[in-house]
Length: 441
Ligand SMILES: [Zn+2]
Image (tube, rainbow, N blue to C red; front, side, top):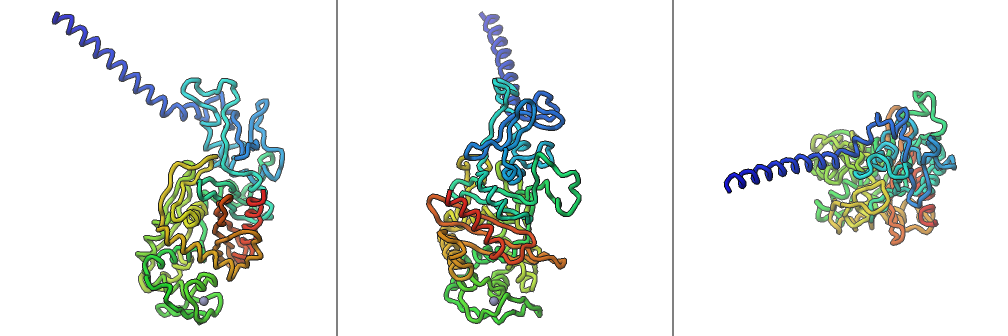
């Protein structure tokens, strides 16, 4: 009896050990199988570094890239090919953040049962969140200038438009990318660049001021065209006279925001820049974005003043800026951004609902007071412009960020036109063209 029991026990332990080993293997296979299948040395799906299976579609099902007869085929419209270049990726893997690279496992159609191939051997299909028609509208509106146009559905986190400019037709890649025209052309500027935010950063200083200065709305400020801070001058864009905080944002008064920055102090501004997600790297469908930067200058210094109005050493990644304004639009909650069709899985509260609502109202007032409602027909627009000095005698970058209040079209946007001059004039016009295309579909 004892012997039988012993044997049973040892057999049982053997079975248990095998089961454990097997489950470990199954676990490893399930976790890493996707990576193993999508190694570029996997000859079945890659040819000279090119992914030779899978189809990339836009949110409406338009085919942006597929494979036919062993060749990579792109959309037939050259404007769509160019405008979706960075979203889709090129044939040679130079654009590392394109769908052909990032979503390779899904395009290969890997699944744990069938291995690397889907049964029909055509690979998988990836449906992006972007609308290629909006990308084309953004491309036309940018008219060959460098920069970024991005639109997000702030209720779902889906990026519905993502244009990085300059770009090229993937059928005719440039032979020499060292010319100024092609500077940084393989980078998706939306994900992988960081820009001086200029006056768009006043929204950060405003967020801090709204939450930290109780009598902000009771105050009257005076702008005399410049303000002395620690023996140096911060100059303004005009002489705005006696104004309240609503008008100060609407005319983008440097004097008022410089004084608020000094009053709030470097620690507070740094904390808000961090908490609003503008300094660290964020993830968009698993892709790590470029970090932004906020250097805390000494309390009371003119550098601190400039840092509160988006100059000094400030820089912001466009995706992070879009997430920030989307959070304002969405009542203080920023949805996780996604490049794939369908609502994202998570969200973060970045500010109080009451703060978000106040900022939205003020951004709407900017349009009424300064940017001109007639320039944005039919849109209930909330926006902030920026004209970011970049030095070296070059024209400043033009920025325009914000959102529309529209139940059917809950869109936030970021437009950056490099060396575009005035923010609201240049970048505002691009924003209007793309938003009109989005609303009037
Ligand atoms: Zn002023």
